[in-house]
Length: 374
Ligand SMILES: [Zn+2]
Image (cartoon, rainbow, N blue to C red; front, side, top):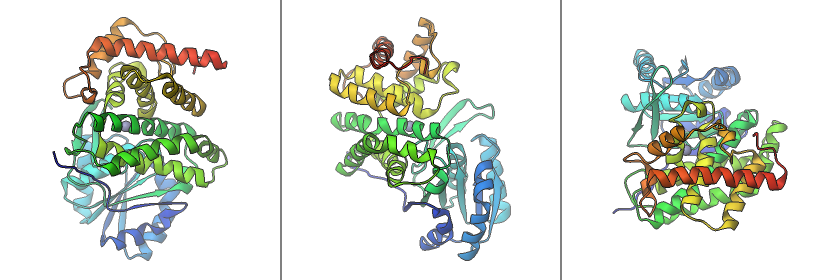
């Protein structure tokens, strides 16, 4: 198996980096007209800066207001506007669904793509895939592309004003990176790009975990003051760049499969991807029979920043055996990344580990006098 490492061509991060968007695009040799696919908040917060930055660098552009769902119909509407405009580059600005839509339209039209995440809630911005939904918001398919974004530009001035719960969800997604990467490397399985993992990807995944433990709490405090700090800069890099490179170039294992399983019951739908992934991390560590000190380190981090460690905290206070069976079946479906674990994983084992993680989380909270309601 060949070793494969993938990344965006350029990653730029910092307070008010949007002011440099045009210059950064020009540096890569990208040319206009540009089509900016943007969410409501991004348009409200960034419109003036786009004008300054893009016009200064000689880019003409139009803004397409995102319709709310990364669906096939929405991707087609973006493509139509891009054709009408004669776009030569597509820029996505907003949350994960906006970026996924921009990426899908750009891939279909063979255009370069720039992603400008306005939240640090997942590791999607640097990746080469989109999650496609139906118009009603049900999961439809993954689309995987040959290339990662040409440019990922993260404005930490904007992230510092984003909802704290989204930054915490990003930490949940990033929390899984090191554990899933290690499992994939130890099992010598393929990463998300079809190759073996590199030392580089594994080291980045480990660095991602270390930054979460060191800077997670301080980064969250920066959001209270709505002002970027060095801790927030490092944490945003972990959530966005390190987690993205780590998962794509090292691979996924049980934690993300448990997330997918949890989405099989509607009670979890109002919880963010990273929140469900964080619960999946606990389940993975239990499946892998990891030693207590490691479980305690993860539980301590999760409860300190406010990530879920109990079923009640992801909407499953009342979970029937039938629901649990559904989750376990979906988690272990054929092709799921749970089969990257170095042992055969059966639905019964997963169901038991899901219950065991809940018992562990509740006991941890009880010992520390934390309410189990959250
Ligand atoms: Zn994820």
